[in-house]
Each structure stands twice: as structure tokens, then as C-alpha cells.
Length: 280
Image (cartoon, rainbow, N blue to C red; front, top):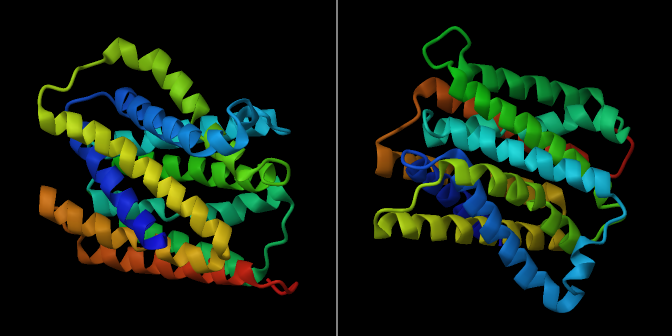
């Protein structure tokens, strides 16, 4: 399940990068939200009931989660128009480290010195990739980082809503605001696909996103996060292969060094969080 999710998400992002050259970000967000929402309803409604999927004890938090997911998609999809797929994927790995930082004020968690050090080292890796002041730094890298901030806040709130809402409810609410918001904005800049490849790309966008989230939710229901999280970094391999095969993009040495530092820091944080003792 983890491997399937790791394959689906790079395919999703590669499809977005292909589509964003000819279609607006809001239209792409709308297509992804529509397919993902439909898939989740078809998956969960027969067992739980359609109305039950919207019964939440955390309506404000669920709404805020969905807004953050929408912003994360808009920022990330906008960046993919200019930045290479592997670089965007690597910078996006700052999200798990940001979750640790946000868990203190938002969740009241106690983060020890070791995890703080891992977070700092991880951001050093991000700075190596971005290289402020160099030609690599532009608005696209900042958009990716902004998306990572939104996604980290989204993940932190996901922990809070899990205290009262079931996974099916949370899964459906994930894209509710994205679907509603993009349905309002997308028609103002709507373009019909002109060939079969674009139609297939839009369909593939929904399938990859829905399957990726489904298998990831199932994986997290069967194993600890410390076991699942390291698999997520396999996306860098898929993103690199797709970026090279489709667009001829290949990360330079500094990007690889920064990415490795980020990945190792993220894995360390995941392992430390898995420990049940009070030593952080």
C-alpha cells in the first residue's frame, strides 16, 4: 500500500506539471478535488451512509483543514509551472519538520532537544536546495515552501480532528472546500481539453490522487506512522525519474545533498515520535 501511494503521488504531480502548461491552476485543482471527493463518497457512503460522512464534532477545524489543503494545492500546483518536479518534491519534504514545530503551539506537545536539532538540520538541507541569493531561488521555490507550511498546518489539525471524527469523515472533508472554492473560481478561466492526451491527463489526475490518498489512509490504519513515513520519501525517486524522462530535468549535486539531509532528518523525527517514553 505504501509503495502504491509512493508511485501515485509522483504521477499525480507529473500530470499536474503537464496540465499546468495549458490550463489554469484552479481548473486543475477543481478536477482533482472533484475526482477525489467522488471516489471517497463512493468508497465510504455504502457502509457509513452519505449524510453520516458530513457529521463532524469539529466543524471549524475540519473547515480550516480543508482550506489549508486548498491553499497547499494552489501553491504547489502554481510552482510546478516553473520549477522542476524533483526540486519541488524535495522542498516539499520540509512539511513533516514543520509539523513538529507547529505541534508545540497547536497541539501542546513537548518536543525535546533531539527533535528540535533534527528540524534545524532539515531546514539547513532545505536552504542548500533553495540557496537564497542564487539563480535557483525564485517565486516558485517560495510557493513550494508556502504550500509545505499549509500542508504542515493541515497535518497538525488532522491530529486534532482525529480525536472525535472517524477517518471516512476526515477523508471526505479534506477536499470539500477545495471543491467548492474551485467550482466558483474555475469557470472564469475554463478551457476544454483539445486532444485525447489532455482528457486522459485529467482522468489520470483524479485516479492517481484518489488511489494515493486511499492507500495511504489504509496504510496508516494498519501500521505506525514511524513505519509508514519513511516510505513517503520514495516519492523523490519517482519524481526524479519522471522529471528526467519527460522534461529532461535532473537535480544538481547541491539539490541531492540538501534532499538527503532533509530525508534523513525527517526519518529521524518519525522514529523519535514513535517512541512511547517521555524522552524526546
